[in-house]
Length: 74
Image (tube, helix red, strand yellow):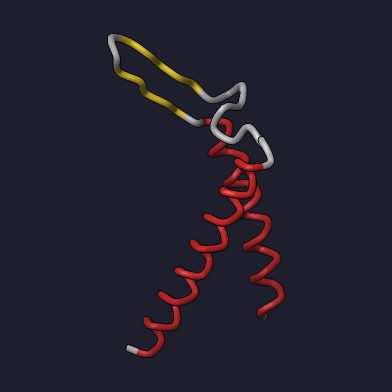
């Protein structure tokens, strides 16, 4: 059970850091969620948001960071 506990603590810390970065990005006025490739559909009081461009950018950044972290831990 100890390895699972460690991984859950690491995952929790990563989620905390990512959440903090998103809060800081919103305060700085970065347009995450409102990029040109993000689609918003509004109809009859219903809104659907598809943040395609934001998802791609976040995915690339996380891939690079996690690859750098994995290489350091080897």
